[in-house]
Length: 311
Image (tube, rainbow, N blue to C red; front, side, top):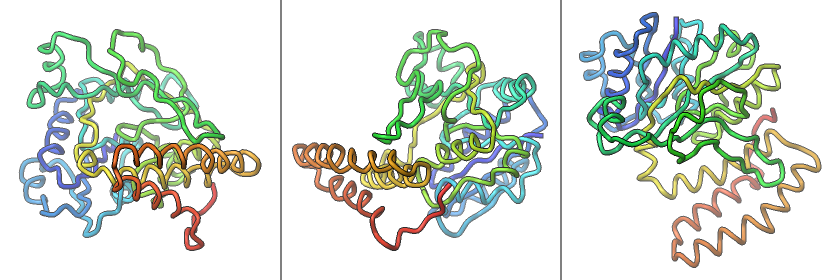
């Protein structure tokens, strides 16, 4: 059995589209768990009436990405757990391909499918038909990632914004899974533990992958499985929130996963390059709201009250 877990936050219609795509899957041995992360209006009646096959959990406070997903774990019964963003849709055959990778490779700790941007011109159609109608290649969002550089705290997503011309066809190891869609065996979850909830937004899956790798497992991408991603419908409306958490959590990720001289070099780069460069960029644009969010995210890491467990 595969437990498919998704978190809804003020996007009930979008989540329903994901649930419809799950119904189109040929693989039937699944359970679906929807966690509502304190949406303004409780969507319980909609999900329970239209999708009775899904378990529904309501949180009375917004627990963030990791907290929302982790809330489903006590009720998940699957041998594999498939975490999927609510603003994604799963292409038929995706689950079988991911499971096949676990069968073929003995040491996989977590795997993500190929993730493509949803064809926005056809948002009300299933993505497969939308792709056909569009008459042009789909656009890749994720086909793997490079490791985070210990000096700059940055990494690169492979294939991002490239047209999908069949250049990614074989499964391969990668540095990180993508939080929009990632499958984990229960045995790995039990050994490593769930995602750390201290990030709230962004970097949870990168931090988790570091822990999974330290436990002796490999991170893979399976491009023969595909998920279509509508790219953070909620967060696109939250510019300063995004700036704050990306800044805060990049530094927090480095503090949790690096130490010694490598962390010291990162701090030097942060203060001598990242800080002046970003401040100047925001000032020249007249974007003082994001400048404040950037500075809050940066300096929140240096307060004495910022406590966190090292990995």
